[in-house]
Every structure is written in C-alpha cells, then in structure tokens.
Image 1 (cartoon, rainbow, N blue to C red):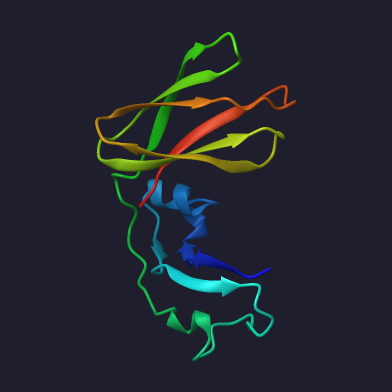
Image 2: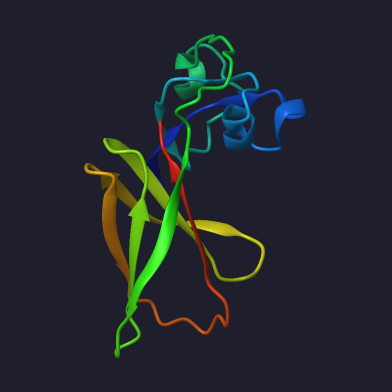
Length: 143
C-alpha cells in the first residue's frame, strides 16, 4: 500500500531529557527539520536521505536552547455523561495547538485529538467504549 506521509527529524541533548519535549521544556538544546512529504511504501525508497530521493530534501538545521513557552496543558474531567461520554476541559496557553494523547494499555501514548486553544480554555469529548480499565490522558503544545 502506498501512502503520502509527512516526516520530520527531531534531535535533542539527551542529558536534558529522554524525549524531545522534555529536553525542550527543561532548557536543553534541541532542533528539528522542516516537514518533508514523502510517499511511503515505495519499494525503491532507500533507508538514508540520498540526493534525488524523497528524503533528499532534508537540509541541515541548528540546535537551540529550550524555549520557555513550551508547556503542557492541564486537563480536567468536567462531566461523565450517562452514555459513558467523558467531557474534558483543557487549560493552556491561548493561541496554540495542543495534542491530546491517551494511554489505555499502561505503556504506550497514542495521539487522540488535536485541539486549537484559541482562548486558553477548550473542551473535547471521548466517546470511545474500550475494555481498558484505566485510561490516562495528557496534553502537549505543538510547534
């Protein structure tokens, strides 16, 4: 199956945190490439960005010190409806996009919903009916 995907290289000083987001939030050095659009699933795609390949557009970038405006959002459960729907509220910096992630297996965070937080407060719902006994949520500001 062939599909268009977007890729981005992200690097950070691991001494400042084990993830890109942690290092950035704690003032460590970090950097990221621009977004590249490639076609995944093509059998001729080599594993490295050779000139003339879809990843040949990857260009050099510099590391910078962590930014103080990188924040996580604060999530509050507002209501649990009779049909099982959960109504959540995200409090965070106005004018930024946030990625809400969910964990249902006790180990892996998966993207759940992308929110534009125009005013500092935004609500969203979760109507999923999984068999997970515990569901965890977190929100992170996107670049």
